[in-house]
Length: 82
Image (cartoon, rainbow, N blue to C red; front, side):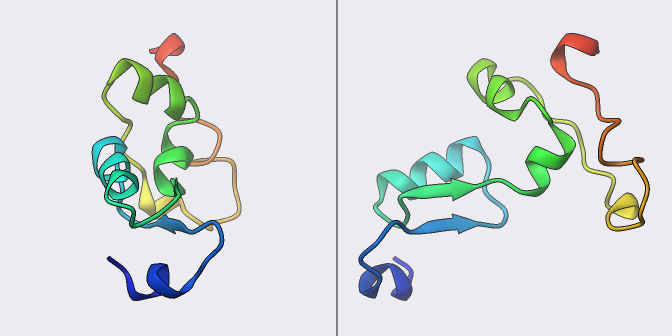
């Protein structure tokens, strides 16, 4: 269990590298109250629906991160538009 979790008494949120199953497992083990999904949400604007359906995720295009254009931010396909 993360050391901060042991001493922090409020809502504890983890992020970084979690997927559907690993995030749920971290919560079940008491390591976190919530899991934040940054990059997975960026590449999958419909991430909650993908998790509900256990659908495959889009791969993020890291080369487009923070380059100042819409490419890589608003052009990922949703399940409905595949």
